[in-house]
Length: 109
Ligand code: HEC
Image (cartoon, rainbow, N blue to C red):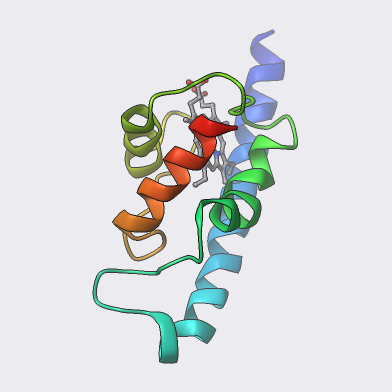
């Protein structure tokens, strides 16, 4: 069991590095028009989920999030602070408003 857990952790860390690298590239491209001082804005919660969270949460790296009625405050706290193998996301990556919409989207689904 210990071994499986550490393999998962390493996988999650490697994925987080590639997700962050990919996001940084996306953000760099989008900086000109959409980036504001508040951070990177996403179109809606579904977009953030599919482009960022699903990478781990739809691939057995992270636990399932839908259908559990997780409180939005809990989701926002985990996203901002991270949790063990889950990396934190800063406002420059997901701004506060996009994060609020994301948390509502996850709770509704
Ligand atoms: C790099 C992989 C990765 C990405 C990307 C990721 N997560 Fe996670 N997430 C994890 C892992 C792994 C855990 C389990 C952490 C642990 O060991 O407790 C987790 C846990 C969570 C939890 C706690 C679930 C519970 O059962 O209590 C929430 C909520 C969560 N993630 C939300 C998100 C959201 C929202 C996003 C998108 C912004 C996201 N995560 C992106 C890997 C990821």
